[in-house]
Amino acid sequence: GLVCECIGGKALAKVCECFAKGYRGWSGGLPDLFLWNEERMECKLVEVKGPNDRLSNQQKAWLMELAEVFVVEVLKVKKPVAED
Image 1 (cartoon, one colour):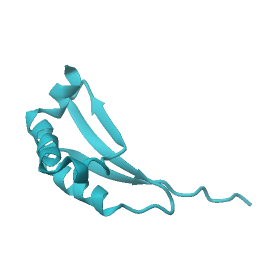
Image 2 (cartoon, rainbow, N blue to C red; image 1 turned 30 degrees about the vertical axis):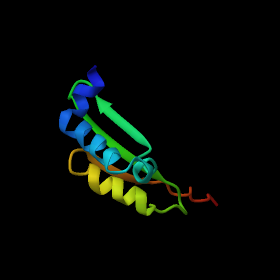
Image 3 (cartoon, rainbow, N blue to C red; image 1 turned 60 degrees about the vertical axis):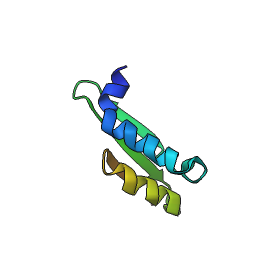
Image 4 (cartoon, rainbow, N blue to C red; image 1 turned 30 degrees about the horizontal axis):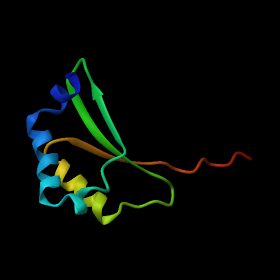
């Protein structure tokens, strides 16, 4: 379908390659969001982190692998500033 076209064969192959290396080790840590734009046929992966959160080693590994074939981002959510 359309989403697979946005992702592309090279990116799908990369994900399958990681799982084939060892599903148990690669089954966790995938980015939180997959966003795509149908008009531009583009997609990106986003990992969302809270104010006191940090990337796990597995998340870092996924982001490094996926950055070869996807646009990847880490979105840091900040605590709201209290109003006086």
